[in-house]
Image (cartoon, rainbow over all chains, first blue to last red; front, side, top):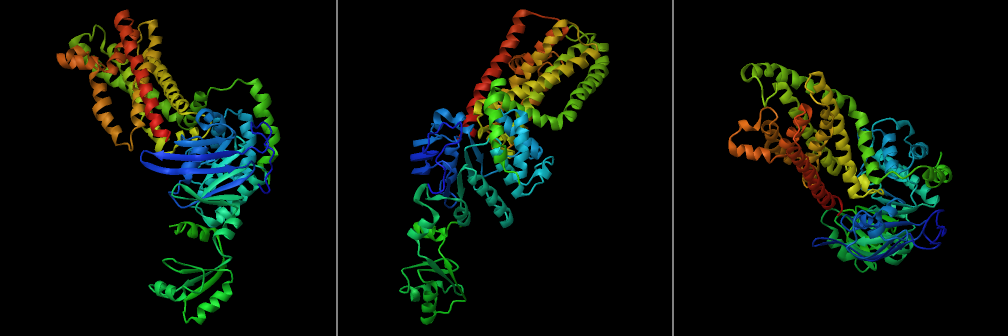
Length: 323
Length: 280
């Protein structure tokens, strides 16, 4: 993988170059409902791997299986070279989980939350305290160490959850929707912390339905939809393969999208009609915009931008990421 | 900015190398128990005060106050002074209440509100560790409460035998006989409505009719049989036999066997319902 260190951390059971996680035909079923429908992927050591998709795509179910908290219904899954069905506790002792819903103890202090979590891994109190100090600094929570968790902001709670998952110094950190519900500033701070972890060689698996988060953090992505992997590659490669270089966004008065779409149809290879705007896929945005004006269409506003993963997702599934 | 990486090398050495050799591994269930100990750090003052206050209030009001009337008219109840009859019954009833309480809201909270069990399950702890840790905590709480209760009983002069010390484990056993099956029940509930029903139709009738306040021989025949089938009756009878020193091996062993069986059965049920609820 580009930029990843093939050497496993000291004490790891992984051989050099052996994948951190391997899934083959992985299925998760809840009674009649199929949440994950036969997916394959490999996550390399030191890689930052993303599962991108809308709510209900099967991302969380996949994560919970990797975290050995949810039994595999069918297919093969190896995490750190071991089988979650038989070695769950051993695997969990070497991974960190940041679940979608916080599981912090709101009535205890920030520091106590870290202390307790470290105890679950049977770390000596002295070691936990040492690490907690560094982790609180890393999470910019040092001055809140002795405060209760309850009144902390959403961003602080998320950072504490991440700090807590790092107490055991995991080789693999699993983050399920790490920044959902946070304001932009809190998200950027969190991304920065995650990027630092990546630089230290921690393997990251991240689910998200934010394309900017996926682009920022992930070396490689699986685009998930309805329990399946629709495509997998690096973000630029996905964009190159499934979208054009640029996109022209046009906004018309309400109700005029369809009729304008008909007029502009021949202009570009691909045109998407969204409820609030038209998207024209093209390699030359300015040229296309000029051509739009020549057809006599008068959008209320227009924008030429580069393609994003949002466009990739739209192309692959015909739907938007955030609905 | 200190990154965790700075602590990484030395800290890992102490954790996986030196320290682990010096220190035997803590069993996983005991690590889950340590969570409840941390929790108790926050609430122990109020909890201990209550544990002292309740027996003093109950034994004064009902044991001494009402008891003087009872003794005046009936002379003895079950062959002893009313307060001697009442105190061990209340001790067992308190154990029931603590065991039941601790297995209701805290279990639901750890599943639904605080989601503590899920935090534990993301670590090396498994479902059975989580369950044993919680029940072990309840047993510890029961030990504390029963010990305080026995101490207060001694102050009221209601301890009449050295066997009374065994009333502490008897109280614990009475409490776990409720805690284990109730934990199993709590893990199946989607909201707390079931708890008030459990109180109204379960714990409160038992509190009143299990021989705590009067001998069950006062009840009509069919109700006597019903009372003898309930766990609190056996807890009350066992604690009473021990504090009065009126031991009778056959029935007493039967009380113990009943309470152990209910605890074991409750544990098996709880293991099942915890797995169903927590591992999906």
